[in-house]
Image 1 (cartoon, helix red, strand yellow):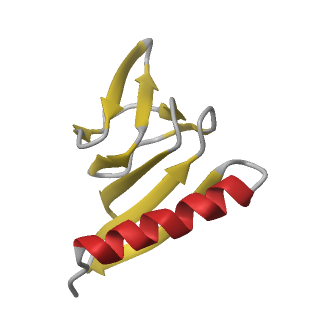
Image 2 (image 1 turned 180 degrees about the vertical axis):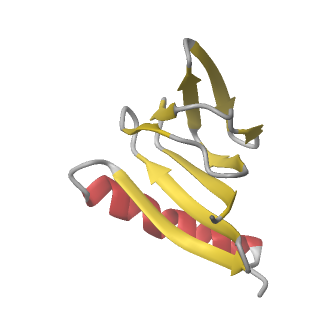
Image 3 (image 1 turned 90 degrees about the vertical axis):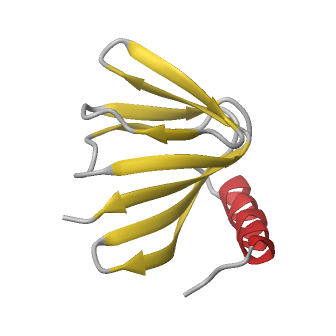
Length: 109
């Protein structure tokens, strides 16, 4: 399957509206799957977060809009639009500095 940039941009807009309307300021939707490989679009409103959770077997994130901060074991990294990040092999959380969307790519267990 192929998703064009325009289709991804439209999906980001729709999920941003869902996140804005939700009580927790979040939205997530599966974008593509290929065997165990998963691509999930996650959208967070400014100030909302994903609470501490473990890293899947392998995981990267690509920020498509806004900026986020990933924190783990007393460390943190800010990732802005266009940034690609390999998640640390540790419990971590994610906080949106601004309304943000990112593509999470994982290998499902």
